[in-house]
Image (cartoon, rainbow, N blue to C red):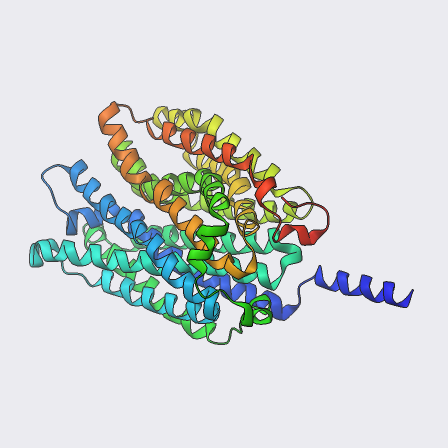
Length: 440
């Protein structure tokens, strides 16, 4: 009886997370917040950057060039994920955390200081693209590393701690839109397109340096520390040999989340102001409220994920995004509903999929190759479905001649995510099985 009682007490203690554990989770999440701020702020100021660095006689072509540079950063993410996750799975998570945020901070500061096209010509455009690629390379290992780290710190409450990470990341987007709104309010209209995006990049770079300093106190992931001697020498090769199908399932599973994030976080500001001609400050304010609502929805979904199977929550979320995409874009165009209300409802609906996908993704891979698996799936999915979304949406508007064309992109991503969710029960079970009640 004593042994049974002790075992029960031990199990109960593993279901909770200590204060030190929460500190680890929050520090891991902070890096994602600051790095996503750095990454997304490019999309928020895409039109101003286009005018300064990628000028053209056609405003739409100039904006497309800016979004192409945005997509270039995403194209670097899979390579960054492969390289950084290799070191994370072979030598540990901590060093990857430190150096990814440090290098990205330097790139972000550099982007704020790039001379204009009028001064450097094509060299200015090339430098901006190069720094954007460095950003993408570093981000390729940042968020997958954070998800891997917190799951291995608190596997018994994996849905909630994963939701905390992505809620903090989402708040990084809110911080970027908040900075944009503040700068557009404080600066004169003539100064906004010249200085606002530069100031925003400098703020992000300095915040990243602060994150680097705070993260130096992090210790190695407990789960990795226990199996360090068994670490894979070639994690990427082992992943493709033993878990190729879960990689494909994960890529499909993340399509809805990635597609929504590319459209809502990166494309929406330029779309509202440049295509639908909303007041830029009103557009940024409404988006900020929507992003905060999404972060709250993510936290609520993570809490529910400890009580309801996360795959059910994800399916509900992508179904809502798919079914409501066309009515949402139609209402934006016709102005039949308040902009803030529309973006808030969209953010809440997306909270269901954004708050459940991460724990399902980590559940597809064992500890030995988890960082590599999560990084590969995350970066491929976000490169294909999120990084190209602003450029694809803008191109579709031009070619199809309708401002509601982005709805088709969201609907396709949602349908693919629903298809992927049908396979996660078969290939999951490496994390959530610890709950003793379900695998996915």
